Every structure is written in structure tokens, then in C-alpha cells.
Length: 158
Image (cartoon, rainbow, N blue to C red; front, side):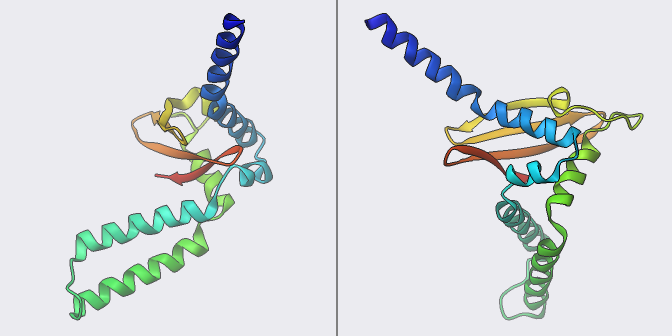
């Protein structure tokens, strides 16, 4: 009886460890078929937009370094506000598809499968999974997946 419980625990652990890889494979199939509906189900657009907004805000703060109440501080605030609006307009499922599609091309422009172009895929924590697409002399593209209930969704592309 002890061996059965150990076997069930081992199988459960293997299934839980493989769970996000199943979603990466589903995304790979959706990208190959250009199925934006399936891609939409795997992307938390609000989280992706929030991540881009934070990144824009950090870069603006780093470059401008304006003090509150100063003209430069006001400009800094306005640039961040406009950047936030631009993110809301520009980042949609088509943007996600196009961003991934552009990275999933070899040097001659031929499409690559996500699973073939992935250079790293592993857990950051129990509910976060990171996938990195790299190669061809381009900077890596990272996809952060987070577990939401019973599924995994992309929450950041950077």
C-alpha cells in the first residue's frame, strides 16, 4: 500500500511539473495556426499591459529624473501618462501574435516552432514559469507565465 501511495505522489509531481509545458505546446500550435482566439485564452492582456507600463515608467524615471514640482518632473509625469495611453491602444492580441511571430523566424525569414526556438523554460516559483526565446543574434524574448486557477497564462513579454 505504501508503494502505491508513493507511485501516485510521484505521478502527481511529474504531472504538475509538466503542466506549464503543455500550455507552451498549446501556444506553439496556436501560433502555427495563427489562431488569435486560442492565443487570447492564454494571454492576460491586462497583466501584459501593466508590465509594459511599469517598464516604460521605470525607463522614463531613469532617463529624466525630474523632481516633483519642477518642469522636468511635470514633463516626466506627462510622458508616463502618454506612454500608458499608447500601451492601452497598441497592445492587443494581434501585437502579442506579431511580437512572437517576428521572433519565431530564422535568419532567412522562415517560421520556427516555439518549442524549437525556446532556449530556456523553467519555473521561477511554484506559480510562475519563464520561457525564453533566443538565438540568431537577436536579444532574448522572455514570456512570463503565471498560474491562474487551473490554467497558465502569459502575463509579461519582455
